[in-house]
Length: 74
Image (spheres, rainbow, N blue to C red):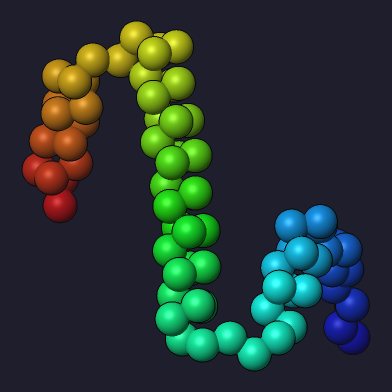
């Protein structure tokens, strides 16, 4: 017997995007919106990374060391 999976309700951003995309749009418009969303989340991610780097006092050499360790383990 399968159990039903409960889907959480849509949040305000999801509802707004559904309303926005409920009309016909050109590929150019869709590409522009996709680029804006990607830019937004890229900036948010970079801000969070910089915050963690500052809080934990991580230095560039630490990043390079970890990267080299990962590449050697492949």
